[in-house]
Image 1 (cartoon, helix red, strand yellow):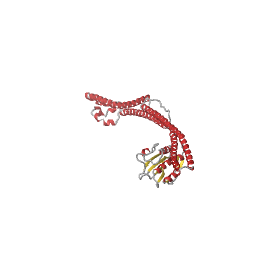
Image 2 (cartoon, rainbow, N blue to C red; image 1 turned 90 degrees about the horizontal axis):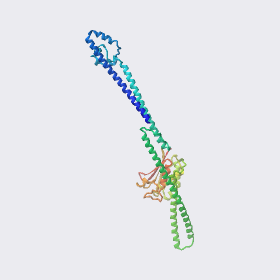
Image 3 (cartoon, rainbow, N blue to C red; image 1 turned 180 degrees about the horizontal axis):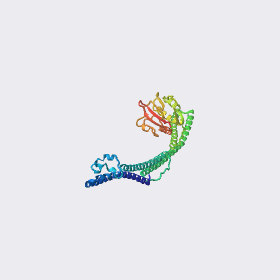
Image 4 (tube, helix red, strand yellow; image 1 turned 135 degrees about the vertical axis):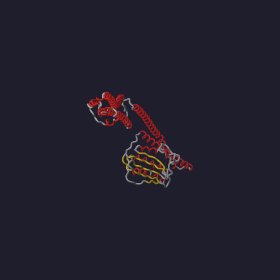
Length: 417
């Protein structure tokens, strides 16, 4: 509300209170005036009758020329019975303005003042609601991404709140822009690092390939026994080098994928997909690894439960979870899967029969490049963070915990939108 509106409300409020007070004062003063007149007239008539007893009938005839109205006040005014004129049936209500007239004047003034008071209160409340609604709509538009909204400056009780909201929103915009800039820079740096890794990895791969071919030529030639032993060692070293190259290539692919996620350029082709299909395809891609480890995978076939996701990327996320469970359990055990649906989300659980997560690892499981002290695999610590990013970008969440009877469990929820 502006300063002009505040003045209007104040004037209306003061006027309404003044009318109420004036109405009550008028009514009380009128009653007092009638009582005073009654006492004066009673004393006058009493003196006349005392000085001239023969004038009693004349005084009575004179008083009876006034209008007489019997009201509740007449009946209750016993305190005036000692006056001489009260003996003739006259009371203060019979003098001047009648009680009913004064009462109606007072009621009218009181109602007028009350109506003005309620109107001023309603007007103030309406203006306050309008200001609160305007500020609320402003915040809602800011939350939906609308920018550049500015209110007209006003001088009222909400002006300070409005200024503080503007300051907070401006600071949040600045913080958001700085965070986006930092994230884009980080994504660009990741992409540059991945591309820079590609050249030496390719060169080393070619060198290893040439070394394999040269080693094959040495093996086919007739060489002394010592040379044959040396060739075997060289072959073992080349295999180790190839294994490390594969890790570097996996790191390069992971860094490129992380850069796309951070930059927000990873595209998803989201379609209704059955959960059983996702789990089955993920387990099929890991079949050889499960066979080598001697671990079974249990996927129950249930009713069709569709989730709106990208099949390939979601399958990639599930594969990382299955692989972690497989690596955390021993030969002859199994990795289990289950899924269920309620009105809010579809829940998928994947768990193993291993020892579970270490307590100190639980808060950091989904951090990039984090590897627990008891990690048995030779990964680089990106799989779980990638799974988390892929799931969250498709309106889902993931958490990890230990089961009461032992074993690590991953719980994924895709919310129904």
